[in-house]
Image (cartoon, rainbow, N blue to C red; front, side, top):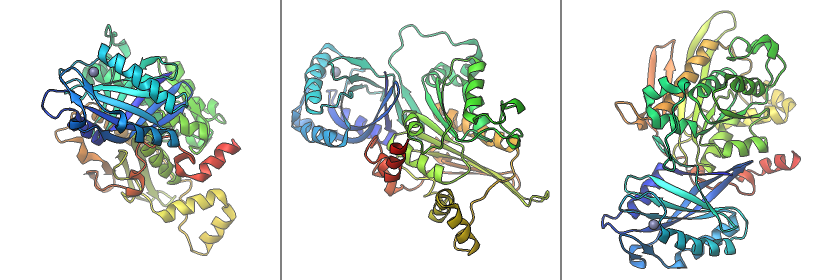
Length: 464
Ligand SMILES: [Zn+2]
């Protein structure tokens, strides 16, 4: 079982401030974490932080002891909501490892945590050092514990804390040129990454090609459609022989043939499929490459509940069908849990969501309301050019690399939205402003009933 932890940069900063008050002594905070699970994978996501007050603790430079009265309310919540309890303490001396003192304290603590919250899923202990690096371990119900695969910090930058490697691995030949640009650390982060791509057509296809060639460790593909002849103008690595096969299957087979070590999970389903949702929930990073707005709305919500860094790619080729072009443009949005949303940024409206949902659920009613002028139609069978899709999928992958390996003159915060118009000749960058309050309350909530607090998803799960 590969276990990871995800938290936002804002959560990380709050914990860091509490754990390092500047007096050189250890401090401790408790956390309530949401859970994500898919086969062989588990992820904890920070939902709530409870700093244990300094004056309630006995603190030295080697040890911190604290009253368990701070734990009890969290245990109660964890039990009721199916969540995990986590303890994080500081090592002001900078030692990023669990000491003997920690081993003894954790054995006692997590013994009683498991006795209280008796659901056989892991809880978490972590150490933070002044640099902000975090080392975590999962404490299992049978009394054993294992190091986390990594801790992912999602903010303007995306940062991974991985356990100190033993002997550093040789960089494979195929990745040498990438490592020359972005360094060994970035290559190793990419190697350890679980990355989702939702929508595997015009923009998703070339994006999968690029991330596989970066050497991403795990790639999860979601798309319900099959390859059609009309797709051959733009889906990279598809051929006439692939017509009729699910797009995800064709791309997964390609990544396999590429032979660079990426492991692929392919879901030939809509994102609302329960297995697909769970597989994406245990990712670190997700790319949304969808035309519609319903899928985007769902993915933005999923990314919030499960602490994912979310890149949305969209292209627009506005043409009259007879060679007259209105405009050619596209955008890449980067979204962080607890910040603004695609909806808040005006990418779509509630009316557009409703129209798309109606078309899916009740096509006759949709046509009727469209004819009466009550709703705006959902764009269908738009013109598409592979080169345009490739441009914006490349921009999205570069955006991901620049957040993993910050290299801009200005901070990444100023590049939440990038809109590029080829016809008007402008490239606009906008910062992440405002918070989607309706979503923000679910940051790190993880698995719950109903799934994503959306009852219709549970109905789909039961039907599956
Ligand atoms: Zn310690």
